[in-house]
Image 1 (cartoon, rainbow, N blue to C red):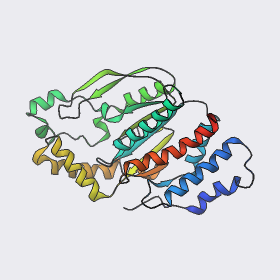
Image 2: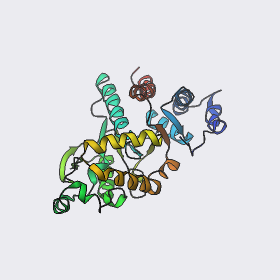
Image 3: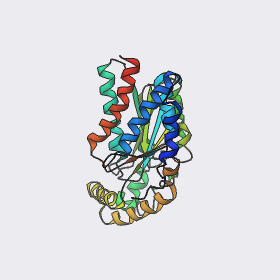
Image 4: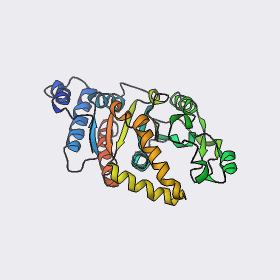
Length: 287
């Protein structure tokens, strides 16, 4: 796996060295703790964390300390079968367990990017099924999704409004039901999908996360999923198109990501890493 964001320890060490001798406020103390957590993880064997930008730690510290007193939004992107949805679900589960333990109430709300694909069910019927329709329709471009609507919904949630989200059927019907899923505002709004960090939607997020994965592993996962969805002989063509379009729309998002995660780590490792960050929240707000 090629990491286009080089890990510059000296640059990141400036964050640590600036405050290590005498951090002057709570936010800076939190920043030091986070820096150690991130550096320990990135230097571990088979790390969950592959790279990060120092300003991401600074911003996380400001949210934890209360210097930024509003909801935070997280966008997670990566290629098809990279593991982004699984990672997102594990993040949500870990945070919800924390919320139950400390009785914080609603703390995280998910907005699934895939639910914003346009409804093309009539065209699928006319084509005689998903396999035939997919030969002429490109799902692997941002224009296949109503990202403007997603942007609007995220901003409404961040402003404290309740929203009715759409629901898209990923089984092959391409049916989208609008105003289907009630979503309530919370401390964290999290979204994941192929195009979550593309130009139309990226500015909705305080934290941009990219999930990176070895091409061989990603391809194996894709064809397992394609078989489950009954894509048949069209799977090869769909994969090749997805890979080509990822080079245009998805992989470039890695360069602007605040945090790059591995899509290959064991699932419990993501939870361990996040729980270390949540332990900082616990010390600040619940000790």
